Length: 413
Image 1 (cartoon, rainbow, N blue to C red):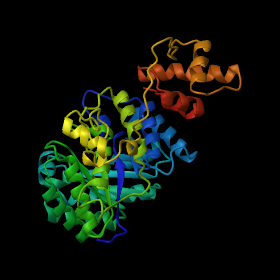
Image 2 (tube, rainbow, N blue to C red; image 1 turned 90 degrees about the horizontal axis):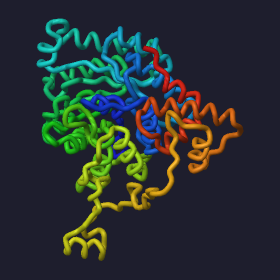
Image 3 (cartoon, one colour; image 1 turned 90 degrees about the vertical axis):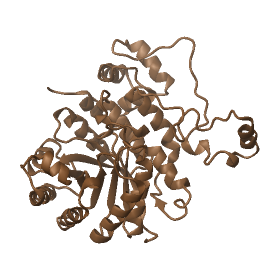
């Protein structure tokens, strides 16, 4: 292992997390998550689907925010099928796209029973390489290549596929445990062998069908690091994602920072700031409408709660007796104030007086009535867009960046 090799986080909440069945996020909520992920020091947000029409304005608006430095230094990466047609459509609809992941299935199961004869093993590689060349030609600056169902792919073929991707200019290979069937032992060995053979940074993308998602993610990353390659772990805020979910963002970071045998040997991207954890997890819970389990690592209501007499006594004497990390490190500890008196809110039917009162409380002033009226109109649209009361962070964003906000709220069927 090269001691300079590190683990980077690529969060996929806005791509895989929003594919969680029966729930969704508005485009404003996706934008706010990108802002919080940037504040947290996450390397890249997989921010959406560039060939999905209802995403177009949101994607372009977020790329404008990146140009303004609002979403910087985080990378905004799009997810595409590895076909020339998708690549061409993506750059036509989202011309500012610079970072992307191209995905195609590689297992015998998928090639035989998903493609149904349309592709074989050699044409899967051919499709992927052609898509990569087209993306580079159209201006892609970085491309990750996804091997869907990598955990059930024959290792010899996976190596062949990855070497072809490297030769075509891939920055990373994404090892996808699509069905969540790997174990910490198998994923370590497979990713370690893959990294040694291909000598390219590896992404690990795991699902939680067997309850092993965090363990698999850090063990897969360790396999790449031990082979002398950088590793990228895919996460979702609060472990959202298809079926049983993806690797929880905060749990992964805590495991790397505090896991015995891990914390002193393997290195996390130094830009990661856990103090944002509480804010982003609470926001995602509100946006998704899914409560945080009380036993969720670091963030759950019971993560720092002690009732047993022995435990309470020990924690009061020295928190290290029964707490592995400080709650302040995750941005916890400040009291949350709940108003129980008069409350003026800004909604889709708000008037100018109540609206200005709401903004005065979050210490934002408008230069004149015209500016206030314009922002009020956007706030009304935002409430229709979200279908729930806006947070202070959302209200601030709309006032500070009205033009991108207008684009985010606009869709043309």
